[in-house]
Image 1 (cartoon, rainbow, N blue to C red):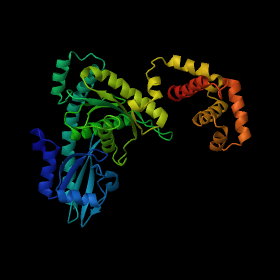
Image 2: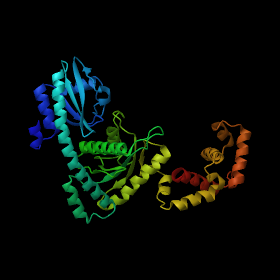
Image 3: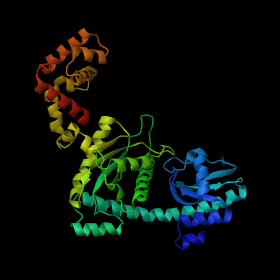
Image 4: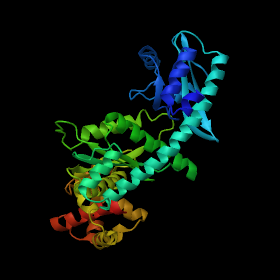
Length: 399
């Protein structure tokens, strides 16, 4: 195995050698179970699926195996950490269909894991440099600093990227940690690296010419449209298929994330604007729909127009001018805004609004009066009502 590494071999070579010597099936996966290399027969793969150790996207559920042996039919499966310098790099999974995995086998697997750690460390050093160049190139492309079109296309070819076709730009961001979490900077970086690797692997399996790069706080991927794409929103099927594959079943410590999708970019010249659209979509989508959302720029409606206004100060000024004291973050203002939104949604049908908010009719009439004293004749001025509706949407997006 050391010879395999020194001669420039890869994880597939190590997996094949271990499988041959020990007469087992072998998988190398990421720490969250995404396959990196394998020497596994179709029968063993089917056995893993029947024992519910593979999710529908092909991710090995390493969290179900743990450090102890797990039965697979009449045989056994074991999972070992591949680590170096205290850093968790991967998992080495061994499957034997008809017998247990002996202590001698485990000892050999531990040696294989050590050799694999050497190989992965070398590969990741190279990949880190390559990813930096790729990310820098894609950033320059979005900033219109990459050069003329012919040069850009030729440079992309050296990365194996195909930029000569219509694409949608997808911006994906890990959602913020919960209130009960306090991850370190190293932990956040580990999450991001694993997230970027998942997008690159999934998009590479979909089409080897798909550009995907880690921008430190987000992953940007250019997904080509499927042949005969007749989705209501361009790119809907390919985006959802990719997101599903990256998400898996959320096991293995995988983090929830949000996605923004641009309009179709038909040429290199349209990519910078498409990236801006994808960024807007993920920001607005998370604010309006919460984490774990997939938001298409063309489906933002009024939010799309609001998001295109670059001056946040002007937006906040508009909200204050229209809503007055209702723009304040006080409990009373928030409560009245909720009532106002229900009234707008019901076209100022007081009885229906009272029913939806579980208020007595007279209570709702009192609230309508209070709102009109603060904002003006909402019930009979359609222009004022439109301004108020837009101001509420701006407040929802811009805060």
